Image 1: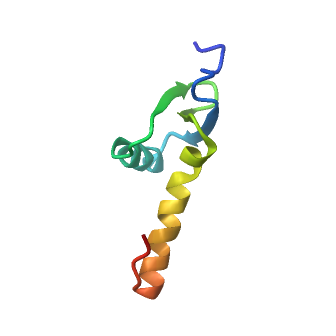
Image 2: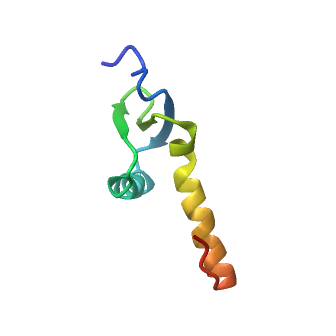
Length: 77
């Protein structure tokens, strides 16, 4: 049982045990930034932990880019 947040990875995102959590794990595997994770059994969640707020929101940024490309047909770098 973990009683203390790893101060190297202070930003956390908790996701319930479901398929989206596995999609996030696959997405994180190809990222260049460092991250960590642990299972929070009492909450029934996987907690993904990041060093910076920018790393924490990177997936949202990637999803917004993908949606932009689908809607407009324009690739945004």
